[in-house]
Image 1 (cartoon, rainbow, N blue to C red):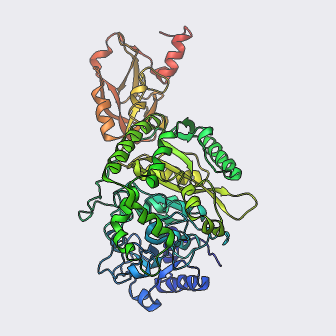
Image 2: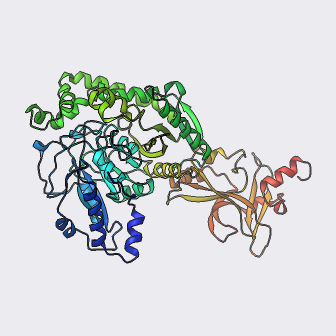
Image 3: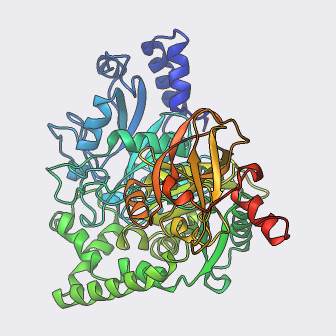
Length: 584
C-alpha cells in the first residue's frame, strides 16, 4: 500500500502561509486515504462533503487546518463509537473532552480508527474490522491496541492521531511504524468520553511524526477536567541537570526472547545516548519488571470486566475470541486478591524509587521483538504477553513515556524503537530529550519558562565547595560568561569556605568578572536564597551581553581588609594564582 511523506504541524503551517487555502489541502489528504484503499485503518469516515462542512473558520487558531484521527474508543459527536465491536456501537452527542479541546484549537477529525477490540491487546490483530499492517512490511503487525491511529500517522494520512494507552498501546504501534508515541502522565489528558479499559490506569495518547509535534499537541489538549474523577492538576516539572543521567537495565535483565538483532540495536541506542552527552547508569530493573507482570497476572484484568464484562457475557456478534477469553477470565479474581496485589505494587513502587535517585530518565526498548501477523494469530496470548515486557509497568508506577524511532532494522525496511520514561509530570522535558535523541542532537533538557537565572562568581562555581547547593536543587548550567565591565571582585577575609565579594562600581571599566549562570525553579531559588549568609545577598547582575540576571552581590561594609582581585578576572584565576604562590 502507498505511504506518503509524514504530515507535520510545520508542513501545514507552511502550506497555509504560502497562500494555499484549506479546502484544496483537505481534498488532497482525502485522496491519500482513498488511494490506500481497504487498509483496515478506518472504522468510520464522514463523507467528503461532511468533512468540508466541519472545517474551522478562524485561521488564527493554533491548530487551524490540522487533520487528525481518533481511535474508535474515543467519542466524536455524531459519529459512532464501536470500541472495535460492531454490536457495541453507539452514537455520542458530545465530543470527548480531549477531542473538544483540539477542535477548539482549530484541528479537525477526519475519521475513527481501528483498534484491538475494547483496547485489549498490543498486537493490532484483534478486530472484526480487519488487521492494519506495519507500514514498512505488511507481513508484520502494526502493533496495538491503537493500531489504526499509528498507521494513519505513519502513512502520512493525518498530522496526528489520538490513541489510548493502558499497557503500552500508545507506544508499541509507534515503534513498529517509525513514529512518535507519547503516553502522558495519568490524568494529564481527560478520559471523559473514552470507553474504559482499566479506568484507573487509562491514558489518552498522542501519535505524531516527531516529539516536538507531540509535545505541542499535549500542551493544547491537556488540562484538568471536572467531569473526569481521574483528571489531575499538573505539577511543574523538576529541573534535570544538563549532564543527563540515563538509566538502563543491567545486561542480565535485558529480555529480548532470543531476538539478537533487537538486543544489538538496543545496545547501539545506549551507545548513541552516551555519544550525545548522556551519563549511562545501569540500574536494577527488577522492581519495574515485577510491576509489569502484575498487570495481566493480577486483578487489574478484573477492571476490564467492570467496563465491558456484562456486554461480553451476552456473546454478541463480532466478539474477538481472544479478547473474550481475557476479560471473561476476570471472574477468578477475588477482593482479597485486589488488596494483595495493591500492597505488592506499593512495595514495588518504593523499591523503584532507588533507581530514580540515580537517574533522570530511563531508556528502554519499546518492544523486545517485532512479530509477523501469522505468528501472532497462531499464538495470540503468548506473543502479546511478550510485547508488554517493557511497557506494562508504566501506568502502574505512574510514569510518563515517549516512544521514538532509534534506527532501521538491518536488512529490512522496518524500524527499531526505544522509549524514554520519567516520573510523573516530566512530560515536557522528557519529550524534548526524546526528540533530541531521534534527531541525533546533544541530550539537554529544556529550561522551563518560569526558571530564574542566577549568576555565581565564587564558591558556588562548578568544582568549588558550595556547588553542591546548586546541584542538589536540580540547577542547570545556562552559560559561562562575564559580567559587564562595571564590577570589582574582592577576596573577603575571615570566610569559610573562602569567598569573593562582587561589587558593582558605577563608572568603573574593568575586565568583567567570570561567572556561571544557572537556571533554578522558583521553589529551588527560594530555598537557595534562604541559605545565603551575610554579607552576601542576591541582587541584579548585568552580563557582558547587556542582559541582566539575579546574582550574588556583597554588602560594602565587609570590604574592610578585603583584597581587590579584579585584575585576575575571576575567582578561579585568583585561586590558581594563590596556589602557585603568586598572589594572596
